[in-house]
Length: 225
Image (cartoon, rainbow, N blue to C red; front, side):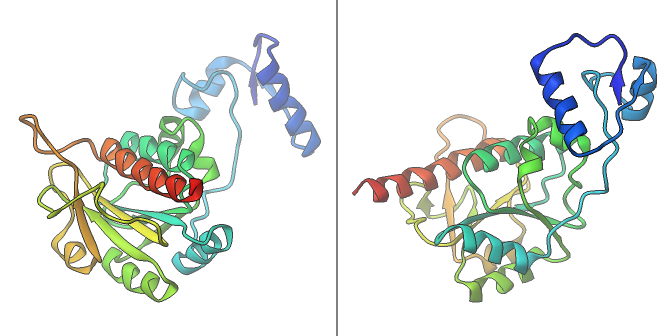
């Protein structure tokens, strides 16, 4: 559905051309109707009816990531409740080539339109799995060759001192709470970000971005040699 009176710009023409190629019906309607359908006025004049998001099962997602790369990275998020945070870290994960994101059924939001918008669309290019138990999920991934590394403020190892060049599950908790105790016990290693100010933690999406790009730095360094 397109709002009546939209300016004829290249991006809009791409949307229309794609819809026509897929034989999708296109309807022009008053902007107010699109506001009602999208439950927001921030839809930029284009709304689509789509299927409910289908989440991956954990093991097939891990196998797909392994098929793409010899040392893939999966991201596991513990108690990340804020959709904006999930969208932000999804954007970084997609940019860093993460093979999939693992969420908790009970302690994480679903991948809603708000999450997709906060990710600048990156969420549409990522795999997501929702699981009942994060700690048990680590046990499923270990036989597939994945090492798990959790981020914790009191960890003995600096985040730059760990060797991430292996199939990896990076486990990130919510700011303030950090990782739950059971996850702390199940991960293979804990690393910390240095904090030199008066606050004792970073936003989870920011912390995740820092470590993900350290993972990339190490792997690019190896490839260069």
